[in-house]
Amino acid sequence: MDSLIFDSPAMQTPRVTPNSPIIFDSHAHYDDRAFDGDREAVLSTLPGAGVCGVINCGVDILSSQKALALAAQYPFLWAAVGIHGQEAGRAKPGDLNRLLPLFGGAARGGTRRKSGLDYHYDDGAPREVQRELLERQLQIAVERDIPVILHDREAHEDMWKLLQR
View 1 (tube, rainbow, N blue to C red):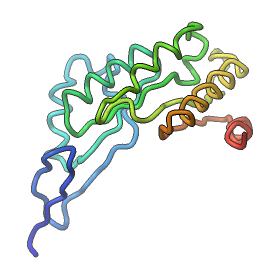
View 2 (cartoon, one colour):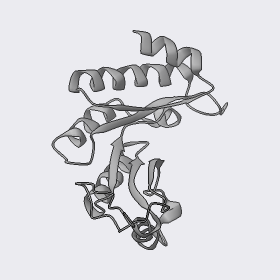
View 3 (cartoon, rainbow, N blue to C red):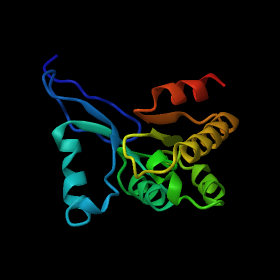
């Protein structure tokens, strides 16, 4: 066989040879303002470069909404929605409730949660705030049977304790 087709129901993938790269990017932030000037140009080149899929991770409500909008626009993109540990200090009391509708019914968007603990920065959200927010997000994921993408930076012990509950 001189070529093969990577057949995904989510997208029409380019014809690739056995030596062509097939890449699935499991963590990206194409909703970030750094891509405001060339987002469409960058994303439109990915399938031709061998990228068959991307999970674009939101870190708060606004970026989660943007991730869903991108997933609706690009068939090779999936959205992960949630509140990142670094953003926990900026989260308002009702933010998790505002995230809940983002999980409903989207074929490729909102089907996984992005959350975690990030103790790297001294000026980040307090650790207790991060733990409480992550615990609630994990409860929601279990209740709704939603896969979770976990971010763990310099928080291994606390992450392990939360996952054992």
